[in-house]
Length: 282
Image (cartoon, rainbow, N blue to C red; front, side, top):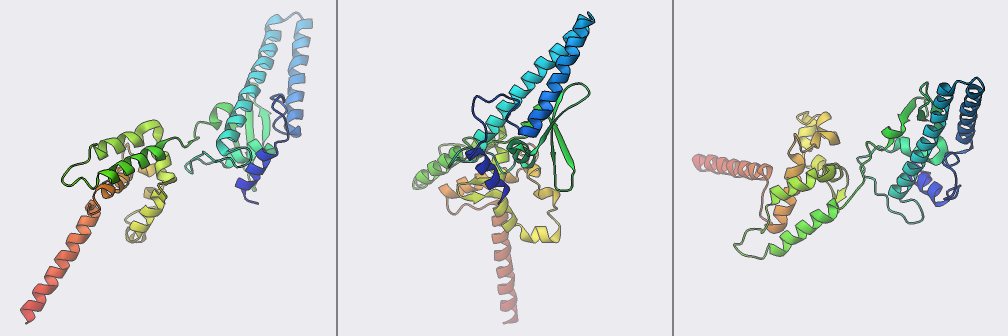
């Protein structure tokens, strides 16, 4: 069974209820770890109170309260993950392909481990098949999540608008394509979705690979230049050119990109040179 199916099956048959405690939702093994750690903190608190050291006792009391808050936060993150992943029958996964969910899939299906560091901070741990650990604090879990929003709907509305105006002979589009695409890509880092996910039935990366096979094979386009982060519009224009060109072609089917114009001009020049040679020989 694929990892995706395993996660969806888990959330469709979730083994705990909505009223479950924050310490109960990460599996029996982790519940034992949490309960033992809590008991240790409470025991230390009691001992310090008996000794009359209220300052140290307060330290352990604060640790118990902080751990409880951390577990509540982690429960909320698990609920958010389930919702974004399409938890429940027929749910749609809202996570962009840009997001690496290897850690999350494992941890939030009770296949991770909870531990506490020397500062009593809560750590979330998963191990791969080779036993290599990935350790994250609670604040680290969501920082790289990319969730799909309205970027596809915005883009498709723009494209449909361009198509409707394509019959307006001699009239330019009533919006600035380049300006609008710039704003769309920048809004909430939507470029991460636009570079990784299907937009209007097409994947940017698939099209880009197809169109540039010759440059990839020659090494002109390196592996680093194919990493999703390399298309960040803050320092790269390839994503902008691709989506702007699709809009412009919707308005004007004869529109050519700079690459297409260069190729067409090359064919014309080649044809012209061939004709001149044939004429000279005649």
